[in-house]
Image (spheres, helix red, strand yellow):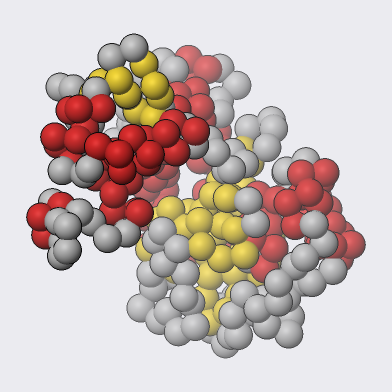
Length: 290
């Protein structure tokens, strides 16, 4: 899209489009641009560009340097977040596929973003009735097994500060009381597994386990299905075993032994490059509690 695609004075109508034009003007060959260069590349009026650039600097999307402007820390954090999530998906994919093949159920990989879980990956079963979670989508964490599996290893003070006593109700079975949620999270820590019984959607049940080392959980593995055909007691040991194997691969006692997890019947997994996981965890920033 260019400014000439718009009516009237030839500039984009919405502020979001104008901001996108300015941010999109930067590329690998020109990481720094002057005000004049930005005006020439975007076609925006100089006064309009200057006003929006000031706002982007204030919001940390750009930095003001001697030669003009360059991408700021917020843009770098967002890019690092995307890279980190892709690396986490790639690292866990073989064992998630194996879990899906062994259970025949829908398998999810989830991370926490403030009050919600974000679904990074999903392997769907033939019967997905009632399961609305999609890759890239989000669901309130307190009513999902995947979310509770991560919240259980989050500082309780941070949980309280984030929810502020407001737990939205998705079904009649959703936990809407902070004391009940705290009790549920304590039970999750004790057994190492989190359960969901029609709390996020009618007819859907799930069991999840965290991916973690000695500290907070970075993600969770979850298996869900229709309440009429899903035996959580059968699925729970498989989910827990998968989470333990992934955690051991991501957070080994010997940091030099870190490996990418592989399928049980597959070739020996390749070793993680030195510092790869540290980079991954640093990249997952912002509001993600990882």
